[in-house]
Length: 187
Length: 166
Image (cartoon, rainbow over the protein chains, first blue to last red):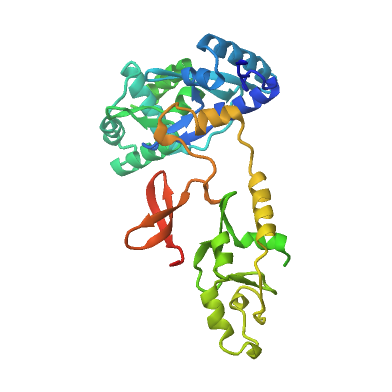
Protein backbone atom coordinates (compact mmCIF):
# COMPACT_ATOMS: atom_id res chain seq x y z
CA UNK A 1 0.00 0.00 0.00
CA UNK A 2 1.41 3.37 -1.04
CA UNK A 3 1.79 6.00 1.68
CA UNK A 4 -0.89 8.70 1.48
CA UNK A 5 0.24 12.16 0.42
CA UNK A 6 -0.08 14.85 3.05
CA UNK A 7 -2.08 17.65 1.36
CA UNK A 8 -0.71 20.24 3.80
CA UNK A 9 2.93 19.38 2.98
CA UNK A 10 2.20 19.98 -0.70
CA UNK A 11 0.64 23.42 -0.22
CA UNK A 12 2.65 26.23 -1.82
CA UNK A 13 4.18 28.48 0.86
CA UNK A 14 2.23 31.49 -0.46
CA UNK A 15 -1.02 29.64 0.16
CA UNK A 16 0.12 28.57 3.65
CA UNK A 17 0.94 32.21 4.46
CA UNK A 18 -2.39 33.38 3.00
CA UNK A 19 -4.41 30.97 5.11
CA UNK A 20 -2.27 31.55 8.20
CA UNK A 21 -2.88 35.27 7.84
CA UNK A 22 -6.64 34.63 7.91
CA UNK A 23 -6.36 32.28 10.91
CA UNK A 24 -4.13 34.62 12.90
CA UNK A 25 -6.19 37.74 12.19
CA UNK A 26 -9.50 35.97 12.82
CA UNK A 27 -11.77 37.48 15.46
CA UNK A 28 -14.64 35.51 16.85
CA UNK A 29 -16.60 35.37 20.08
CA UNK A 30 -16.94 32.27 22.18
CA UNK A 31 -20.14 31.23 23.93
CA UNK A 32 -19.43 33.55 26.89
CA UNK A 33 -19.11 36.50 24.51
CA UNK A 34 -15.34 36.80 25.01
CA UNK A 35 -13.51 38.04 21.94
CA UNK A 36 -10.96 35.54 20.65
CA UNK A 37 -8.22 36.80 18.34
CA UNK A 38 -5.82 34.48 16.51
CA UNK A 39 -5.31 30.86 17.48
CA UNK A 40 -3.69 28.80 20.24
CA UNK A 41 -0.14 27.73 19.27
CA UNK A 42 -0.51 24.07 20.26
CA UNK A 43 -3.74 23.71 18.29
CA UNK A 44 -2.19 25.50 15.31
CA UNK A 45 0.52 22.84 15.24
CA UNK A 46 -2.22 20.20 14.89
CA UNK A 47 -3.85 22.20 12.08
CA UNK A 48 -0.49 22.45 10.30
CA UNK A 49 0.33 18.80 11.00
CA UNK A 50 3.65 19.88 12.52
CA UNK A 51 5.32 19.78 15.92
CA UNK A 52 5.12 22.87 18.14
CA UNK A 53 8.80 23.57 17.39
CA UNK A 54 8.22 23.34 13.63
CA UNK A 55 5.15 25.56 13.99
CA UNK A 56 7.19 28.18 15.84
CA UNK A 57 9.82 28.05 13.07
CA UNK A 58 7.11 28.60 10.45
CA UNK A 59 5.68 31.49 12.49
CA UNK A 60 9.17 33.03 12.69
CA UNK A 61 9.46 32.79 8.89
CA UNK A 62 5.99 34.34 8.53
CA UNK A 63 7.05 37.10 10.91
CA UNK A 64 10.06 37.91 8.70
CA UNK A 65 7.72 38.14 5.74
CA UNK A 66 5.20 40.32 7.59
CA UNK A 67 7.77 42.79 8.93
CA UNK A 68 8.08 44.22 5.44
CA UNK A 69 4.37 45.01 5.57
CA UNK A 70 4.55 46.72 8.96
CA UNK A 71 3.02 43.76 10.76
CA UNK A 72 4.38 41.21 13.18
CA UNK A 73 3.39 37.90 14.71
CA UNK A 74 2.45 38.48 18.36
CA UNK A 75 1.97 35.90 21.07
CA UNK A 76 -0.09 36.39 24.20
CA UNK A 77 -0.83 34.22 27.19
CA UNK A 78 -4.33 33.22 28.07
CA UNK A 79 -4.75 30.97 31.10
CA UNK A 80 -3.09 27.61 30.30
CA UNK A 81 -2.50 28.48 26.66
CA UNK A 82 -0.23 30.55 24.47
CA UNK A 83 -2.09 32.25 21.65
CA UNK A 84 -0.65 33.71 18.47
CA UNK A 85 -2.06 36.62 16.46
CA UNK A 86 -0.90 39.36 14.11
CA UNK A 87 -0.48 42.97 15.14
CA UNK A 88 0.63 46.18 13.52
CA UNK A 89 4.05 47.60 14.34
CA UNK A 90 2.60 51.10 14.32
CA UNK A 91 0.25 52.94 16.64
CA UNK A 92 -3.07 54.31 15.38
CA UNK A 93 -6.17 55.80 17.06
CA UNK A 94 -8.52 53.27 18.64
CA UNK A 95 -12.30 53.37 18.85
CA UNK A 96 -12.52 53.98 22.61
CA UNK A 97 -13.78 57.33 23.82
CA UNK A 98 -12.36 59.27 26.76
CA UNK A 99 -14.58 57.69 29.45
CA UNK A 100 -13.78 54.18 28.28
CA UNK A 101 -10.08 54.99 28.19
CA UNK A 102 -10.27 56.31 31.77
CA UNK A 103 -11.97 53.13 32.97
CA UNK A 104 -9.52 50.94 31.02
CA UNK A 105 -6.57 52.85 32.51
CA UNK A 106 -8.01 52.38 36.00
CA UNK A 107 -8.58 48.65 35.44
CA UNK A 108 -5.01 48.27 34.13
CA UNK A 109 -3.69 50.10 37.22
CA UNK A 110 -5.71 47.93 39.62
CA UNK A 111 -4.76 44.68 37.86
CA UNK A 112 -1.08 45.66 37.78
CA UNK A 113 -1.25 46.53 41.51
CA UNK A 114 -2.76 43.07 41.97
CA UNK A 115 0.32 41.57 40.21
CA UNK A 116 -1.58 40.84 37.00
CA UNK A 117 -4.34 38.86 38.67
CA UNK A 118 -8.05 39.46 38.09
CA UNK A 119 -9.92 42.08 40.09
CA UNK A 120 -13.56 42.41 41.12
CA UNK A 121 -15.70 44.85 39.10
CA UNK A 122 -16.84 46.39 42.38
CA UNK A 123 -13.24 47.41 43.08
CA UNK A 124 -13.24 49.57 39.91
CA UNK A 125 -16.65 50.98 40.82
CA UNK A 126 -15.50 51.83 44.33
CA UNK A 127 -12.27 53.40 43.11
CA UNK A 128 -13.86 55.72 40.54
CA UNK A 129 -17.25 56.39 42.19
CA UNK A 130 -15.69 57.33 45.53
CA UNK A 131 -13.55 59.90 43.73
CA UNK A 132 -16.66 61.29 41.97
CA UNK A 133 -15.33 60.67 38.46
CA UNK A 134 -18.35 58.67 37.34
CA UNK A 135 -21.47 57.19 38.87
CA UNK A 136 -21.80 53.41 39.28
CA UNK A 137 -24.08 53.03 36.25
CA UNK A 138 -21.64 54.78 33.92
CA UNK A 139 -18.68 52.76 35.19
CA UNK A 140 -20.47 49.45 34.65
CA UNK A 141 -21.62 50.61 31.21
CA UNK A 142 -18.04 51.46 30.23
CA UNK A 143 -16.77 48.15 31.60
CA UNK A 144 -19.41 46.40 29.50
CA UNK A 145 -18.40 48.22 26.31
CA UNK A 146 -14.72 47.46 27.03
CA UNK A 147 -15.68 43.81 27.34
CA UNK A 148 -17.63 43.95 24.07
CA UNK A 149 -14.62 45.48 22.33
CA UNK A 150 -12.34 42.72 23.68
CA UNK A 151 -10.19 44.89 25.98
CA UNK A 152 -11.52 43.23 29.13
CA UNK A 153 -13.11 39.89 29.82
CA UNK A 154 -14.78 38.03 32.63
CA UNK A 155 -12.24 35.86 34.42
CA UNK A 156 -13.12 32.16 34.59
CA UNK A 157 -13.90 32.35 38.30
CA UNK A 158 -15.56 35.79 38.11
CA UNK A 159 -14.00 39.24 38.21
CA UNK A 160 -12.28 41.24 35.49
CA UNK A 161 -9.19 40.22 33.55
CA UNK A 162 -7.32 41.53 30.51
CA UNK A 163 -9.05 40.74 27.22
CA UNK A 164 -7.21 39.58 24.13
CA UNK A 165 -6.95 43.08 22.65
CA UNK A 166 -5.27 44.51 25.76
CA UNK A 167 -2.82 41.60 25.76
CA UNK A 168 -2.01 42.02 22.05
CA UNK A 169 -2.10 45.81 21.69
CA UNK A 170 -0.63 46.88 25.05
CA UNK A 171 2.53 45.00 26.02
CA UNK A 172 3.72 44.41 29.63
CA UNK A 173 5.94 47.49 29.66
CA UNK A 174 3.18 49.75 28.30
CA UNK A 175 0.72 48.40 30.87
CA UNK A 176 3.15 49.22 33.69
CA UNK A 177 3.59 52.73 32.20
CA UNK A 178 -0.20 53.21 31.97
CA UNK A 179 -0.51 51.96 35.55
CA UNK A 180 2.01 54.52 36.83
CA UNK A 181 0.35 57.35 34.90
CA UNK A 182 -3.15 56.36 36.09
CA UNK A 183 -2.12 56.30 39.75
CA UNK A 184 -0.61 59.78 39.38
CA UNK A 185 -3.70 61.18 37.61
CA UNK A 186 -6.40 59.56 39.75
CA UNK A 187 -6.17 61.06 43.23
CA UNK B 1 -36.42 38.06 -16.46
CA UNK B 2 -34.48 35.07 -17.80
CA UNK B 3 -33.95 31.74 -16.07
CA UNK B 4 -30.46 32.74 -14.91
CA UNK B 5 -31.93 35.65 -12.96
CA UNK B 6 -34.86 33.59 -11.75
CA UNK B 7 -32.57 31.43 -9.60
CA UNK B 8 -32.68 34.26 -7.05
CA UNK B 9 -36.18 33.07 -6.19
CA UNK B 10 -34.89 29.86 -4.68
CA UNK B 11 -33.26 29.14 -1.36
CA UNK B 12 -30.12 27.04 -1.65
CA UNK B 13 -29.45 24.80 1.34
CA UNK B 14 -26.72 22.82 -0.38
CA UNK B 15 -26.11 21.67 -3.91
CA UNK B 16 -28.53 18.77 -3.53
CA UNK B 17 -31.27 20.62 -1.69
CA UNK B 18 -32.86 23.59 -3.38
CA UNK B 19 -36.13 24.93 -2.07
CA UNK B 20 -38.78 26.72 -4.09
CA UNK B 21 -41.26 29.05 -2.45
CA UNK B 22 -44.75 29.61 -3.82
CA UNK B 23 -45.28 33.27 -4.64
CA UNK B 24 -48.91 33.11 -3.48
CA UNK B 25 -49.00 31.24 -0.16
CA UNK B 26 -45.17 31.22 0.46
CA UNK B 27 -45.23 27.46 0.97
CA UNK B 28 -41.74 25.92 0.61
CA UNK B 29 -40.91 22.69 -1.15
CA UNK B 30 -37.80 20.93 -2.45
CA UNK B 31 -37.51 21.49 -6.18
CA UNK B 32 -37.77 17.84 -7.21
CA UNK B 33 -40.90 17.31 -5.14
CA UNK B 34 -42.42 20.61 -6.30
CA UNK B 35 -42.09 19.63 -9.96
CA UNK B 36 -43.59 16.21 -9.25
CA UNK B 37 -46.50 17.86 -7.42
CA UNK B 38 -47.30 20.00 -10.44
CA UNK B 39 -45.84 23.35 -9.44
CA UNK B 40 -45.45 25.78 -12.34
CA UNK B 41 -43.88 29.16 -12.85
CA UNK B 42 -45.33 32.25 -14.42
CA UNK B 43 -44.09 32.79 -17.95
CA UNK B 44 -43.79 36.55 -17.36
CA UNK B 45 -42.35 37.00 -13.87
CA UNK B 46 -40.87 33.47 -13.48
CA UNK B 47 -42.07 33.17 -9.87
CA UNK B 48 -43.08 29.62 -8.84
CA UNK B 49 -46.64 28.89 -7.90
CA UNK B 50 -47.78 25.71 -6.18
CA UNK B 51 -50.39 23.34 -7.62
CA UNK B 52 -53.05 24.36 -5.06
CA UNK B 53 -52.66 28.10 -5.65
CA UNK B 54 -52.51 27.50 -9.38
CA UNK B 55 -55.97 25.95 -9.26
CA UNK B 56 -57.33 28.86 -7.21
CA UNK B 57 -55.84 31.56 -9.42
CA UNK B 58 -56.68 29.92 -12.73
CA UNK B 59 -60.21 29.17 -11.59
CA UNK B 60 -62.51 27.01 -13.65
CA UNK B 61 -62.19 28.97 -16.85
CA UNK B 62 -58.64 29.70 -18.00
CA UNK B 63 -59.85 32.14 -20.63
CA UNK B 64 -60.59 34.75 -17.90
CA UNK B 65 -56.99 35.97 -18.07
CA UNK B 66 -56.25 35.53 -14.39
CA UNK B 67 -53.92 37.98 -12.70
CA UNK B 68 -50.60 36.45 -11.62
CA UNK B 69 -49.99 36.58 -7.82
CA UNK B 70 -46.46 37.75 -8.70
CA UNK B 71 -48.03 41.02 -9.86
CA UNK B 72 -47.70 42.53 -6.40
CA UNK B 73 -43.92 42.10 -6.68
CA UNK B 74 -43.69 43.28 -10.27
CA UNK B 75 -46.11 44.93 -12.70
CA UNK B 76 -49.65 43.62 -13.18
CA UNK B 77 -49.68 40.76 -15.63
CA UNK B 78 -51.66 37.68 -16.65
CA UNK B 79 -50.78 34.33 -15.15
CA UNK B 80 -49.49 32.06 -17.90
CA UNK B 81 -48.14 28.90 -16.27
CA UNK B 82 -45.13 27.12 -17.73
CA UNK B 83 -43.00 24.20 -16.50
CA UNK B 84 -40.25 24.97 -13.99
CA UNK B 85 -36.84 24.71 -15.73
CA UNK B 86 -35.35 22.42 -13.06
CA UNK B 87 -32.05 21.74 -14.77
CA UNK B 88 -31.30 25.41 -15.43
CA UNK B 89 -32.09 26.30 -11.82
CA UNK B 90 -29.88 23.48 -10.53
CA UNK B 91 -26.99 24.55 -12.75
CA UNK B 92 -27.30 28.21 -11.71
CA UNK B 93 -27.72 27.34 -8.03
CA UNK B 94 -24.60 25.14 -8.08
CA UNK B 95 -22.72 27.88 -9.89
CA UNK B 96 -23.78 30.34 -7.18
CA UNK B 97 -22.62 27.93 -4.48
CA UNK B 98 -19.25 27.52 -6.17
CA UNK B 99 -18.88 31.30 -6.15
CA UNK B 100 -18.85 31.32 -2.35
CA UNK B 101 -15.46 32.30 -0.85
CA UNK B 102 -13.11 29.31 -0.84
CA UNK B 103 -12.27 27.57 2.42
CA UNK B 104 -8.64 26.48 2.36
CA UNK B 105 -7.55 23.24 3.95
CA UNK B 106 -5.86 25.00 6.90
CA UNK B 107 -8.90 27.18 7.56
CA UNK B 108 -11.13 24.15 7.29
CA UNK B 109 -9.04 22.29 9.87
CA UNK B 110 -8.77 25.36 12.11
CA UNK B 111 -12.39 26.45 12.22
CA UNK B 112 -14.72 23.92 10.66
CA UNK B 113 -13.76 20.29 10.77
CA UNK B 114 -10.84 19.67 13.10
CA UNK B 115 -11.33 18.17 16.54
CA UNK B 116 -9.74 21.26 18.02
CA UNK B 117 -10.64 24.10 20.32
CA UNK B 118 -14.07 24.36 21.94
CA UNK B 119 -16.30 22.27 19.73
CA UNK B 120 -19.38 24.35 20.45
CA UNK B 121 -17.69 27.34 18.84
CA UNK B 122 -17.20 25.56 15.55
CA UNK B 123 -19.29 26.34 12.50
CA UNK B 124 -20.13 23.77 9.87
CA UNK B 125 -19.71 24.83 6.23
CA UNK B 126 -22.41 23.88 3.75
CA UNK B 127 -25.98 23.07 4.68
CA UNK B 128 -26.61 26.72 5.29
CA UNK B 129 -28.94 29.13 3.64
CA UNK B 130 -26.75 31.62 1.86
CA UNK B 131 -26.73 35.09 3.44
CA UNK B 132 -27.49 33.63 6.87
CA UNK B 133 -24.30 31.67 7.40
CA UNK B 134 -24.69 31.57 11.19
CA UNK B 135 -27.93 29.63 10.87
CA UNK B 136 -28.27 25.98 10.03
CA UNK B 137 -31.45 25.12 8.12
CA UNK B 138 -32.44 21.51 7.81
CA UNK B 139 -35.47 19.34 7.32
CA UNK B 140 -36.92 17.71 10.42
CA UNK B 141 -39.86 15.46 11.05
CA UNK B 142 -42.11 16.77 13.83
CA UNK B 143 -44.82 14.59 15.32
CA UNK B 144 -47.52 17.27 15.23
CA UNK B 145 -46.47 19.29 12.18
CA UNK B 146 -44.99 16.66 9.87
CA UNK B 147 -42.13 17.66 7.58
CA UNK B 148 -40.71 21.09 8.45
CA UNK B 149 -37.65 23.19 7.67
CA UNK B 150 -36.12 24.34 10.94
CA UNK B 151 -33.57 27.09 11.27
CA UNK B 152 -31.21 26.77 14.23
CA UNK B 153 -28.30 28.86 15.47
CA UNK B 154 -25.71 26.51 17.03
CA UNK B 155 -28.52 24.10 17.85
CA UNK B 156 -30.72 26.79 19.35
CA UNK B 157 -34.15 27.05 17.71
CA UNK B 158 -34.70 30.21 15.64
CA UNK B 159 -37.66 29.59 13.34
CA UNK B 160 -39.45 26.89 11.44
CA UNK B 161 -41.60 26.53 8.38
CA UNK B 162 -43.98 23.80 7.40
CA UNK B 163 -43.30 21.89 4.19
CA UNK B 164 -46.24 20.85 2.04
CA UNK B 165 -48.54 18.23 3.51
CA UNK B 166 -47.53 15.65 0.92
